[in-house]
Image (cartoon, rainbow, N blue to C red; front, side, top):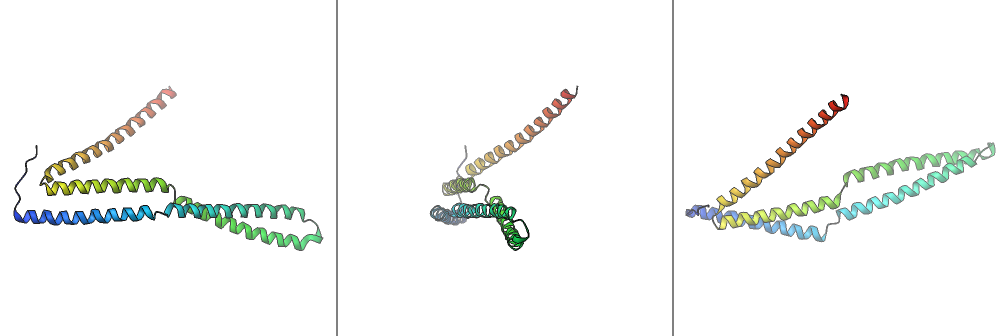
Length: 185
């Protein structure tokens, strides 16, 4: 059980200053949360842009297919001028298709999973607010040692998870090697 220590006046003033700063940080984070909830258009804008590019891509692909079909129908010396015109249009549409494909690939790479990212940010923001609130309570109640012990316990649990992942990876490798040897025998 943690004991409550009597603070010196300077320590009490420092605790009050820290509490004030933490309260300000909490207020700012909550304000940003409200702004982001009401104006979280990133995923909608990216989705709109991708949808617009996909429609343009389909239109260009159809135009390209029509031009190829038309070119195959233009045979003979009489259609030579039309054939050259269609060839130049094919080159232009081909160039635009290539640019459109590059843009789509870039957008898909940049916006792999906006909804999951947004959810993760909200969860982490909520956890940060809870941790800051706990920190403030610990300061105000002069139980910072209990708060510190909780943080150390959480960090140790996180380290155990990383250690367990390493152990699991090593075991998987050992099983894979053992299986390979067994198959060879």
